[in-house]
Image (tube, rainbow, N blue to C red; front, side, top):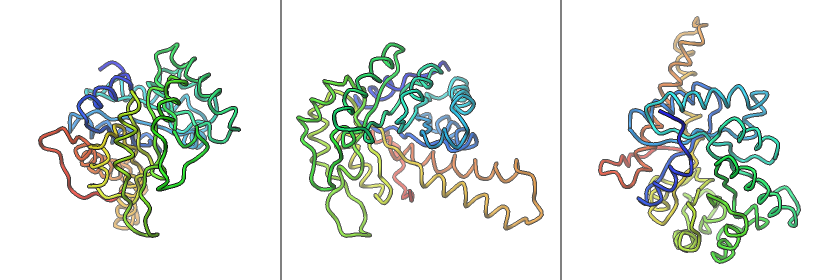
Length: 288
């Protein structure tokens, strides 16, 4: 299947008021597992690699082109996304390679530079039909959990920058809670943000939230949900179990296959969980 536009996937999901899973690809086996999960469930998925992940691979080109190849040869709708990039040159490289979207993080810049840099990224990305996501708290200089964000300010940010997707970190939309308590989201704030902006919302920082809380956030207006920690635990646990069970094993293909299969199974469950418009949505509890 030809490469899929991230923007098309997000707008389609937003129009159906359902969610799409976006997962960090730490290594190629995880990318393969995510594609397998998308094909099994017949649901779309976003493969994303962060700036930190790019650094661990020694550059974007090799892992980036591998992910693009996985997406292009899959029977599922698979988009490829650069996540949390602060380096404009890295963003340009992702655009040049053919990524469907980029998430630009300007939070480390001065308040005067944040909007200007984001607008610059939007301009060159849009020239190649690449969608741009940015985090509201980063653009506004951070937000205090439970304090909320002015939806009208969010509308101004989206209008002024031309963003295609607005990220709201868990810390921005989490309700106030005692340390160690289960995370919950400010659903009223999400609804107000959804009504104020004309672009899909992306939710990060969901570790610690229950499946029910994540589904409620989607029902309130979130479209793209970033999930990864649980998959990394599943991969590592499967590899560890195989090696402990067979101390003489030295073939990486054997134990990496176990890790890949574990990630594929959990990712399939998560994709069904996020597909709240699906009649057979799987709401089984999954630790993230």
